[in-house]
Length: 418
Ligand code: HGY
Ligand code: MN
Ligand code: MN
Image 1 (tube, rainbow, N blue to C red):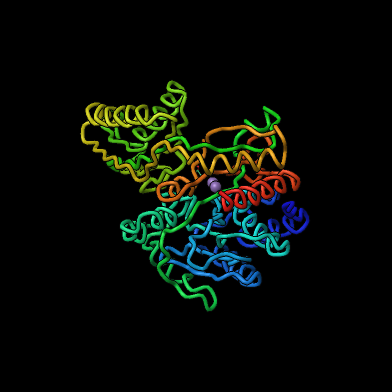
Image 2: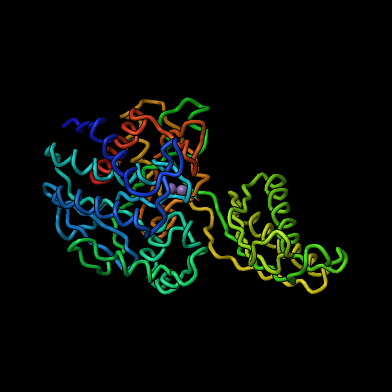
């Protein structure tokens, strides 16, 4: 029986529908839908209502992860479902496709299969993972991390907002955990497999002219959270020779991260910088920053971490009175996905677009790095225009979205038939 085709128009309308929820940060239609914000609450409610309209059973767990399960024709109630997950939260000035395509695509797969009468042995679950971005609460993939290992629940519940004193994931979850009449409950981490459709957020597919990325793994990453303590002082009368300027130390760290990344052919960024004071005429007494560093080799990441520790010691020696402290606030080792799940994606890609697919690793991190710890997992990429993401200009065409969701549908069916 030929597999049903995704409805391009309905898919696009639903992707654009999510853009209504959250603040538009630019005329380009960029999105700002921080995790557990009002915009996130609204889009979650929309997702739950849509899933219920498809006859899905909807559950919300202690991290606010939403699981919408469809028991299709022939699926056994006791069979572990095949998950299709991603995230609806965005960066503070983000795009409209990062994460969204995977969540909307999952609903589209369920709706398309429902109408086709295709027999499936397993239920299908569309998943919205909480706080994938880690932009508001600085640790990525919070929801999927706790799903994969419930022992870290308290750690993530106690995550403090980086910019809103007193706000924690727990306090914000308390305001949104119950979506309509959907009750919060513990959802076991039993998925037969997890497939995530996502935009590539780089230019490999565009440069090679391929339509689909068969993603075989994700590079490693670490977030180094560094606190620098110096001393406030008068900008006009404090001699340069006796200053303990935390901002100058921060600047040296930022440059070190950039130079190191270029040297080891990695990816180094400081996107979070929080001085204790913001005043033109006062020397900054303390600064907190978080560096995001990524590389395909965990050994290189170890060396980068050691290099940063050495730099901090040097800064303390050259500036008497300065103290520093570094913690790793987020870490994912380089991860390989599962052969059988990759096989299903490759088979689906061939069916949808012939040879126009490419095996590749992901530079960006995803919830699939967490699900891969407990379930066979693989990912599907579609191109990003000029590789732009975490930016209002993020764009993928309706046709490219369609191809990706069709591959998601056919990957899921292929896995179900293994
Ligand atoms: O940071 C990442 O790689 C993901 O887009 N949150
Ligand atoms: Mn993402
Ligand atoms: Mn992202």
